[in-house]
Image 1 (tube, one colour):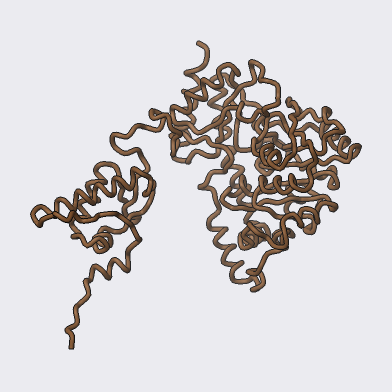
Image 2 (spheres, helix red, strand yellow):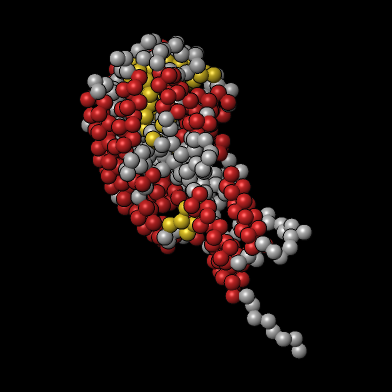
Length: 484
């Protein structure tokens, strides 16, 4: 009878603790026993450095515990522990109590900084990026509580194939919420859920828009790009402090895309007179108005500007999402459609929902029904208002007035059009994430006049721990380029 062999206890540890990590540590055929431990240590250290340098191990990647990796590689635990300590000392790795050993997120010793190397920084020093709320505000506790309720209470049928219009429960909740918070006039049957506003525009481009779509002369590039890819030509409308000059719309235009509550990026709402003008055009020419209400809930020191859709539910397609209110990581958006277009949009999506998470839709519905979503919006509004006030106060102290900032998550800092690119390039070199105003100008729009330049900064994005320092760095950037 064969004698049983006790298994290596560290192999058991590896099975219990390990995350897989592939490292090519092929032994040298001519390797003798003398100095073998030192060679193995150098080989492991070099393999880890190479894996980090070539991007196989990205910043933040968690490494296996040293005991587990030692068991996987057949090395002594002390050898692996010594290599980890060596790479921590060199700045390749970081170790924190309770979170293990991870790949560092700072440049490695001897490597050029992103700005010096002429590459786009992976992690900006001063993050004023646009298009997202502050990630720390995501209502984790409310989302978890809603998730528990949904998973516990919904019937089994909720986990089957989805309706192409989206969850009936969320459409019901949205119809009530949008009516109450934004003045939208609709019912659940006229709402089609999508994953994003861009996806919604793509859906409309294939089915609803004609040959020509009018857009704002300054606006989100993806608005025009997604419809142009579908074959619709876009033409720009000039802008002023009353919003888009909608009286320039003609009978040749099939539809117009607007951000009437808070124009992006200038921040001005479409004036009451122009709201009336665009509705008159739509009714006279059987045209459609597409309203992107991208941050309509985030207003600070003005009365709410209601949705344009309320003036013409039969002429206006209303779209929005949770990207600014909750997170762009949640792929939930909606179209509120005139009755005649519901079947068209539903048929374009196909017989079942192909992209969206119905479970996430149910969780959002629960948050709206319980009031948790409203509470989150009100907390967020106060948080961003304090940030807006701090930024505008610092700019005012430098003699700079920022218009169009009564709502939203960004500000346009005015610059001369002649110096905009110079300041933006310097900001990029200093590690800022922000945008130049010219990025949003339609290619067919007239060139900017001398005073129509600017930097577009997202004041909601910087972490709380660095926000004031980031604002001071922004002020220094502006001061360094102001005429003396």
